[in-house]
Length: 299
Image 1 (cartoon, helix red, strand yellow):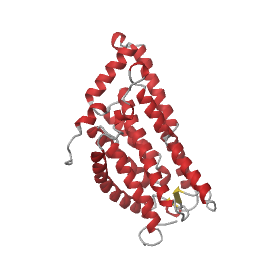
Image 2: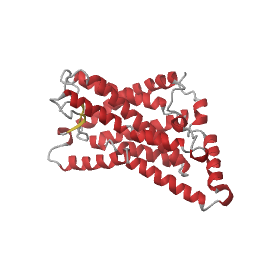
Image 3: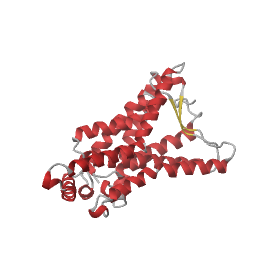
Image 4: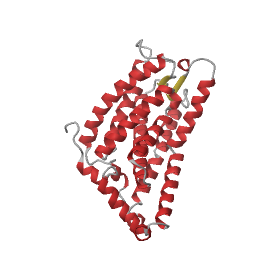
């Protein structure tokens, strides 16, 4: 597919499509009496959606944002510069016991996906009588267009991945970023598969929740597209703040790009693919290159 061509079919199901918002809004209004009264029940519905959104974020990336902020404050107040400290992403839970370590790795990946299952459940309940809603298909996380998702994901990953690496190297050299250590796993047979699985898990959690789900809920709550873009992008930057100022700024910029692409395509599929490819290259690339090339910082 040519660059710039809008994906019309997924847009009809996705929250990025205007008609979908109006139809969904009318259905919710009829169910809660919003069209008839214009007050009362409709306001209660908005409060419920707002509380639901805060709970989902509190169980997932909102909590990660608070944790990252605390970690960043700790790094700032620790003796020495940020570049002399390390932010470790994928470490070992039991270095001398590989099978136990593998069990913990798989447990961590699986449990991190539970908020995504919660989001799928909540989106499914948007339908009449609390069932039959669009689910994850409504935000474009499905297998309807694998070629589109993978193709555009690769294009986006190539553009963001290269510029992100340059930003990281520049921020670290300037003293605004910690040394990011993407992996410190032992050299065992499951190392690369676990790194790939962790990269996919990261991409699914972030794009489904921060882009697809959050934008859908903010639209339903009456936020303007610009306000939703700012909120989603700042949230993405917040839970990367443990890496330093460079990690925050780079991920805010990535968030802006991803929101704009989602609004255009109505699908998180390409964004999940792009994010997964970026993280796979970072994790596996570090495992293969750390200590073997001079330009890659190590801790």
